[in-house]
Length: 286
Image 1: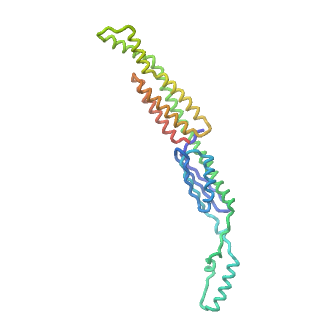
Image 2: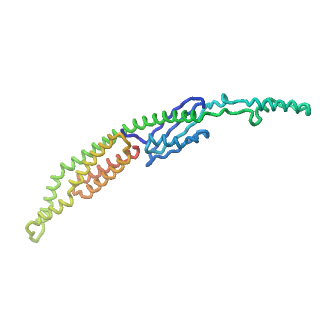
Image 3: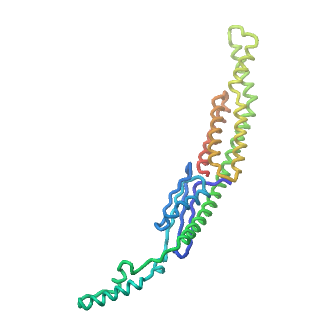
């Protein structure tokens, strides 16, 4: 199943470290390019995060944002009772020396070390991060596959169009060759000088050789079959399709350069239009 490289997905999970939200946005890119934005306390897991993403995505520019909302820090605050008691004793001692001295309780709480943040379990943090990431990646993959299915339908339609053009040109070739022979006979008949025996056959063979497009038509048919096969693979196929579009273009250009008939010339133009339309869609395929 082919996948689009353009998609958006998000997921959210809640745990001891608070609520983590993960947003993913992807657009087409030649390679996999990841731009992660993480809370400071989760940056230690960036390397593993990159590996996790690379195991599920092969191409595309990915913007990955993880945010913490309602981090639960107020619930994890702890009071250093021993330090607070010592500060209280000092306050009482100083009160005898400085009768006007007044220390508010909130001022004691602001003293460095009185209020402490409970340490968060790194394994729990990592598990929460990867949980929300995996669910966002699964949603992203599903979206890319849905978009890819639509792209596949478009590509199959264009392949059907190319196949019809190839069939038309094959059907016209006997008539085109007959018309070519007629033109040569007329030209030779108009010559005032006698024509050597076999000259017509020689000229006809030369012209047919120069304008023969059977190989190009055969290769186009081969490319059509290969493209359909590739579209059915269960792996990233964008690069293969890129190459096939180049091959399609090469044959269409050669077909146009060998054309001696308005119908085949128009057919070559139509082929190039269909191929370009395919190429534009292929740019979005992983």
